[in-house]
Length: 74
Image (cartoon, rainbow, N blue to C red; front, side, top):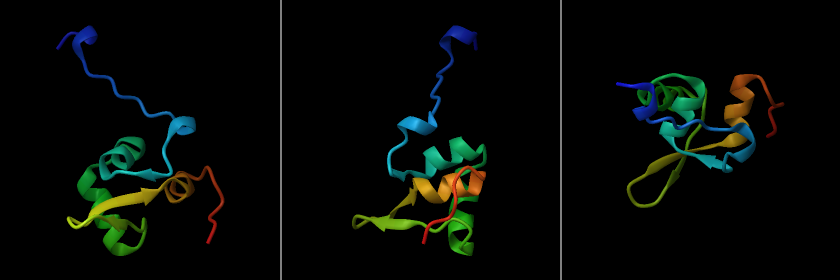
């Protein structure tokens, strides 16, 4: 696929929302969305469940802490 036609979806740390989706976290950490879900089950990256479907959201602070950018606050 030509470079100009590639979908480029870069996330910037400054513009991140307070709660991130599985896909956003996976993209930031450059791992599979399944890995993010597994980390949640193991307690490495706790998820917040929202709505009746139980969609996962992750606190921006927790993701930044995993990246080593921010102190853990709890």
